[in-house]
Image 1 (tube, one colour):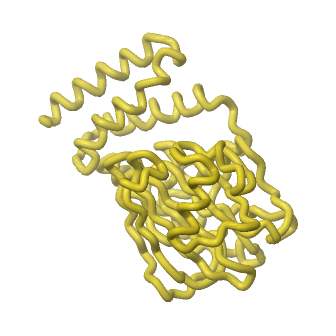
Image 2 (cartoon, one colour):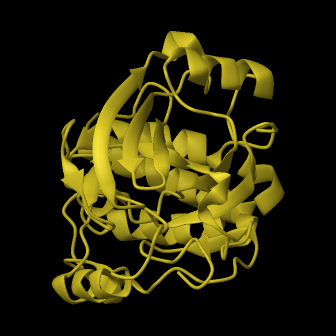
Length: 275
């Protein structure tokens, strides 16, 4: 798409979204904007990028309501404050100071939040009906996980949603060894037409599984790890090129949870109480 045509389309959409109520916009704005952004995601789009980011931030806040634990200001954790493209923004890194601060905070943690997110739901895997975008019932979901070799008995889940303005690099929630990286075909229809990869981490307290779920036909997850690798808590596992959801499956005997549903968290926040 020609850059001038793209800019005109986006500006028209911004005017349209700002002129009608949020409830009217909510059903389609992100889908339409995602389609526009995806076609130009690696291209330089100048100051229009910041108008798009401001629009996303405004509407995320407007529609999600006040989320306890507000997202950190950009200049506290980003590697740079100027971006050449939307993907430059989407795949931004932590700055060195913030990375080191989080690293020190996680040294005594057993399990941490792996990515900036809103924790949508927490529960037993036996009732996984609240998991966003899951297309199978709890029994079918558990049976499918067993079929591909995952342990499910006595497991809980933590369902995390990433908004488009969030930091999209994914870190290890726990210390352990990468036993497997499982790619689940879209045809299996676990999360509709979304891509799914499962990182199987063997820990001293049992296997922990991190599911990374993408956006329809768009998502690719770029892994920074390999099977057999020993990893520490907070090590970077990779990043989304375009994605929206992660899920931790963990044994129930890990301890009491500190985190709450419908609450915003950042990488490194403790999942367990007093740990």
